[in-house]
Length: 345
Image (tube, rainbow, N blue to C red):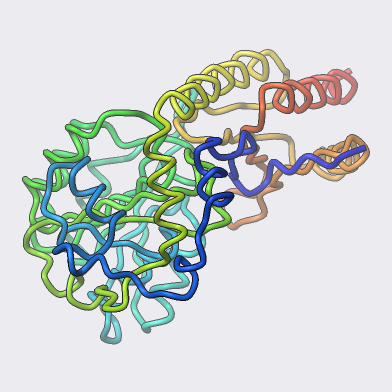
C-alpha cells in the first residue's frame, strides 16, 4: 500500500506539464553559465515577469529560496540589533520565532482567536499590543498557518493605515486565488509593506524552493541587501515562469481545493465530538478529543495516511490535514468519520 503524505502542506497534484517540459528541454548553458539578464536592464527574467504581472518596477521584486528565505531576509535586515521586536500571531508557524531568535530579537505575540466555525484576527487586541510594544517588524499571515484563516481586506487596510512606524510583512505563502489588482494597490499605497509569496503551494514547486517578495517604495535597505549580482537559479526561474504561463491548469487545482475545503467542513461537521474549521489555505485544521489521538494515529498508520498531529503549546489537540487529490481527501474524511463513529458509540 502506497503511503499518502498529507502533513507538510505540499500540493499533491504536482506541477503543470509545462514545468516538466522545461526540465526535459534544459540546455547545458543553464547549468554552467551565470545569468546575463543584467544586459537586458533587469535582475532576472523571473523578477522582470513578476514586475510586469503586478505593474510595479522590477527593482521592487525580490527573489528568494522560498518564502522561508525572504522572511529571514526581512528579519535580518530590520531586526538586526538585540531586543528589537517582531510582532507575530500567537497561532503561527514556529519559524517566525526562530528567525527572531537568530538575531537576538524579541517576539511579541498577538491573538488569533477561535470563533464558531473559523479562527479570526482580533484586530482591536492586535492594535492594542502594537501600540504598547512599538515593534520594528510586524508579520501578518493570510491565510495563517495552522489556523487557515485570512485577514479581510477591510481589516488589512485598517491596520496598515495605523502601522506606519513599522515594517509590515504580509505573508501570503498560502495564497490560492487569482487576480493581482488588490496586491498592486496595496504595495503601491503603503511604502512600508512587503508582500511575500511562494511557488511552493499553489504551483506545486516546493522542491525547487523559489519565492518572491513585492516591496513598498520606501524599503531601500532590503532591496540593496537582497541583490544577487550573479543572478538567480536560471533553471528554477524558467520552471516558475512556465507555471505562471499555466493559468488554466492551476485555476482548475484551485477550484478543486476550494471544493474539498468545503467537503471537509461539511462532512466533518457532522461528526460528534470534533470541530473542523473553515480554511482559505491548502489544509484544514480539526480539533479532536486529546484522549483519542493515540488510537487515531494508529488507524492512520494502518491506512497508509500521514497527517500532522499538532503538538504545540496552544494547538495540541488538533489535526492539520493538507489537501491532497480529491481521492486522497475522501480517504481521510472516511477514515476520520468511521473512527469517531466507533469512538463515540
